[in-house]
Image (cartoon, rainbow, N blue to C red):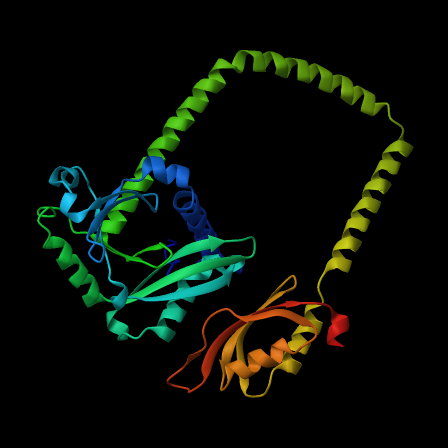
Amino acid sequence: MMKAGLSRQLVLFGFDLSIIWRYAMLGLDQLLGETRFLARHLQAPVLLWRPRMASVDCYQAGRCVERFAGEDFQLERAATADFFAVELSDELVLFRELVVPVQAEIYLDDMVRMEVAGVSPFADDRTISAWTITARTDTELSVLIAITADEHLEVAKKTFRDLEWATGAADPEVWAIDQDGAVVNFPSDQLEARLSEYRANALAAARRLALFWVLGASVIIAPAVASALRVDQVTEELQSVKADASDETVLADEVRAYRARAERLAEQISARENYHFWLNHIAQVTPDDVFLSQVDIEARSVLVSGFSANAAAYLGRLTEENAYTDVRASSAFVRDPRTGLERFTISWKLISQGNAE
C-alpha cells in the first residue's frame, strides 16, 4: 500500500519535486508489495484468527498457506509466530471497488480519501479505511476499499485477546477479507512493524546480492581487461577508417538521419488525437444540469467525474452517442447529502470524429 505523499510541495524552478518522491515510494511499494517471490521468502508469516469460521489460517505473501481448525490449533504453533491478525466481521465493514487509470496511481491515496468521505456511513472522526490493489492492467487499476469505525477494530482485537492460545501474544493486526478472498490490512503499529521487518530483510538480501555481484565481477576482471585492450586497438583502427571518409558521405548520412527523424515526427503528429475536438464534443453532449469536476482523455479512453441531479440519465445520453462505445459507470452513483446531487464517475471509448460529426 502506498504511503501518503509529502505534506507540502518542494518546488525548484517551477517543478514540484514531491512528484519524484511519490514515484520513488510507488516504485518501492510495487517492488515489495507485488513481487510475490520476495514476499514469499522475506516476509514473516501471519497467523490469522477467523471468528466466523472458527479457524486459524497461516498467511504469507498475501495468501493462505495453511489452515487449522480452531479446536485443533496447538499453543506451540502460536508461540513460534511473531505476528498475528484477526478478521473483521463482514457485518462491520463496508467494501467499495474503485477503478482508476494507471497514470493516477501516485494520487491513489487522495482518491481513496475522497471516495471514503463520500460513502462512509460512519462519523468522520471515527472512520477508519484501508485499500489494496486487486487487479492491474496496462491502463487501469482495480482498487478494493474497506471502511469501518475505530470501535469495531477494538472489538475485533478483544475477541483475539480472549482466546486461550493468544494469551501473551502481541496485539494483532485487523484484516478485512471480501468474498473473493482479497485481504485489506487496516493501519496499525503491528502492521508497520511487520512491513519494517520485511523492508529490512529485503535490504539485507540486496546487500548480499551486491556482494555476490562484486565477487563475480572480480573473477572475470582479468579477461575483461584483455578484451578492453583489444577493443581499444580495434577502435583506433575504426577511427582511422572514419577519418578517411569523404565529406560527401558524412553529409549524406546526416541528410538521411534528418529525413528519418522528420518521417517519425510526421507519423507522431498524424497519430495524435484531436483532444480539442473531443473536449468540445463532450461539452455539447453534457446537459446544463451536469457539473463535471474532472475530464481525463488518454488515447481513446475517457474518464469523467462530477455531479448531476440524475446521473443515470446522463449515462443513458452518453450511451446513445454514435461516437462513444463501452460507456459504463466506474463506480456506483452516490447522492451528496449536502448538495442533493449524485456524484458519478463514467468512462467510455472514443470511436472516430466521423461518427461525432
